[in-house]
Image (cartoon, rainbow, N blue to C red; front, side):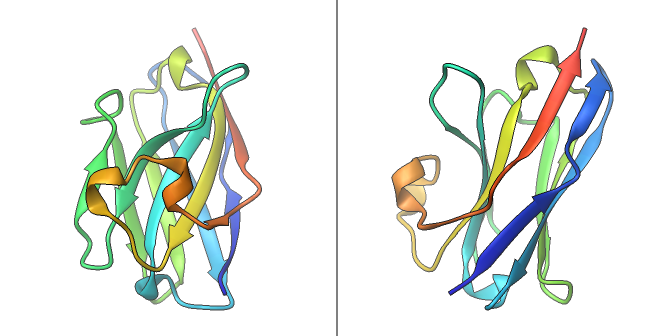
Length: 125
């Protein structure tokens, strides 16, 4: 099974950029559907973006045009490039993976069975 470790979070001002990384071990990311979720204090964990084995992508409406999900199979790493950050993007960001998914349910937390520990992103106004 795959183990996931996120990095790259931090504090940034509104309008800035961050790139999150999720390093995988134990298996190769090319075998998995992978996604980024986020959870703000007092809120449900929500799907941000997902990338299928064939590299098709899905995005939450709130991040379309600002965030880009990608993966580097050679480095066994998933990325989330976040541009034009807003204070409402402040959350703990989690990397997740699953061997097989129902694509129309990509944003559902319970579709994924492997999770990282999270990395904090804080955007100030």
